[in-house]
Length: 339
Image (cartoon, rainbow, N blue to C red; front, side, top):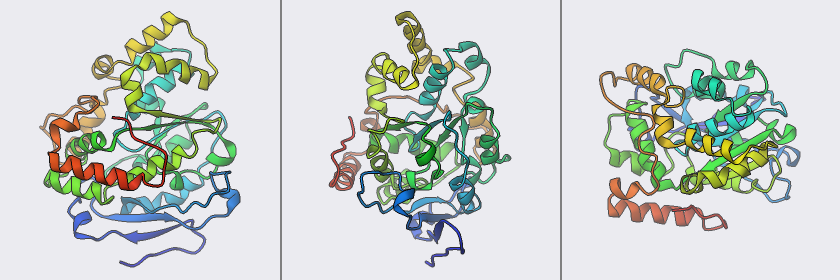
């Protein structure tokens, strides 16, 4: 595999042409590259603690090379709100929560307008093969204050995030539950038709889109004490969202009554969001499935929303292997995933 870097570019690109990665080719993404941020000056580092940072390459569709520099140089404003997660970590849930808290609990608009319109997916045009829009331009032109979501790792995000310092909410989730949810997504939304065992093996080897997974979390864990960063976990939100809401409100400098927070909690419940066309992504899911060879199949974007569902879908052997993988990746960190 040869690595290429154009003069003046921030990234190097290495084709990921392993047998394992090639087997994950699907209608939405057929070939992949490892995108790596080149060495950066200390002044450009997101970290102010003086500790060394060696960004790891991220697996993305080959198409992303057309967008990498545009995302890196994307203009950031201090009134932006960024929702950043690894895929399948409660992103839509967090988007809805953040948008409503930041917009004075405007439920009328939240029910009328899709969350994908209110909170733009920055890099989707560089991820899906058949995306008909330029999502980077759409995000840039969105009326301020902008809400923007991304699954990109810290190293590939806009460099101005660390100088302009907008509000950033990061959400992590146990990799075993991520694995199960991501498998269903990859199969039905991306159009993958290979065995699920191959997909899980690729996740364990960090060869699926947006991997490496644990490093994605750990980079943001290092930023958790920054004033403009709020680090949440899917598990704490599922355990008691009502207790989490005041923390998020404080992050936005907002105050709501106990009754208002009770109403918001109900609106954000899984059952309510699943039946709400503005949040359940039913239209997007239908279009993606039609484009990627799954027309006629049945699938709901908001599937179960459970903690620990991996116990029902992963074999005991795979659970052990994921546990070993997680333990190895966390060896040098004080972060631990919740169960």
